[in-house]
Image 1 (tube, one colour):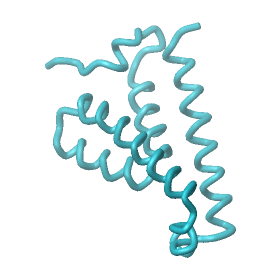
Image 2 (cartoon, helix red, strand yellow; image 1 turned 90 degrees about the horizontal axis):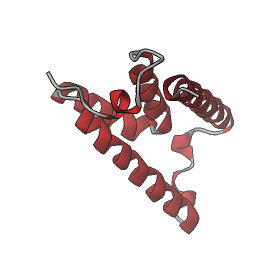
Image 3 (cartoon, helix red, strand yellow; image 1 turned 180 degrees about the horizontal axis):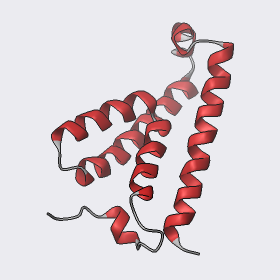
Image 4 (cartoon, helix red, strand yellow; image 1 turned 60 degrees about the vertical axis):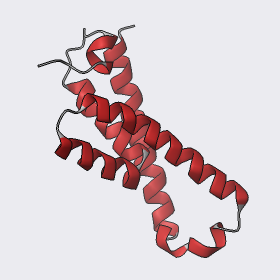
Length: 113
């Protein structure tokens, strides 16, 4: 199986899943209205820390890949605000810019020049 088409499918499914669950949750209750009651839940805090550590880990790679400071700042804001939705979007942009027969290095490494 070729990696690029497989990754395109994976990140499309992640994006669709995240949009679905976010829209479904948002239709029940606003994320801004749940505030104080969650801060008393240790697992909610642990999950939030886990998510943001993952976002920062992913963003380190984005920072490496992007040479423009404007793009770096834009993607930082998007990843920190939208999380996996932004991350899947970033991956899909990168993946659809590559030919289907590209190799792993074409995706993961920064192109020089």
